[in-house]
Image (tube, rainbow, N blue to C red):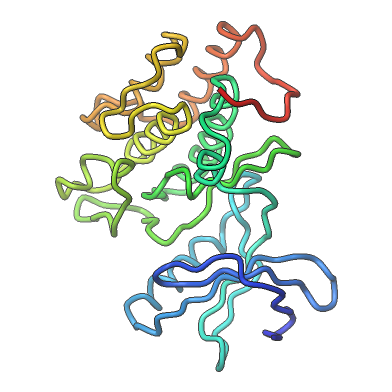
Length: 258
């Protein structure tokens, strides 16, 4: 099937509100990710359009790039995005098991760098979880995806549009506005999941270096004001911690399990 300049090759996934396809630009031959809103519900169509508007202004190596937005007579709303090679961290966990501590660190650092950029743009992602982080092992990158629940410029009256059990910050359930520390909580719970810890209560594996456990535990404090507030500073702290624990701030190891 053809949609504008794009050839749809195959379906990648399907959720409650949309479908995702692998496509290819018909003139350039480059792969793209095509996301389709499937419900036709005006409320969800507005959310889909809002997500596209958010992505339009984003340019970061650990975030997807919106290349086109279409409202097709037969296919409905379509967002054409950069195609990211790799698999979600949720799939990695299911297929391979818990991730080695040093590799949890570099994954956290990639996402913290993306959050530093997002938060500077006054956007709170609001749905960070293993399923929304794509691991690209050859480039040692982790890409944060799915901006359907993102809120830009949240004020005192802003409320989260949803969330995922175990990863949703406590303040969302209390009806409080999303803040950057909300994303930090969800990323901390993602680290718990990656380590093989207990996402029900935030408990980390006993064999994890206590300095790394303490770092992650700070991210998942229930009081949002008691958590780290600045993703950039948190990233810098983690870089120093990696040097202390592992004797280096970078690794050429492709990927290592716990």
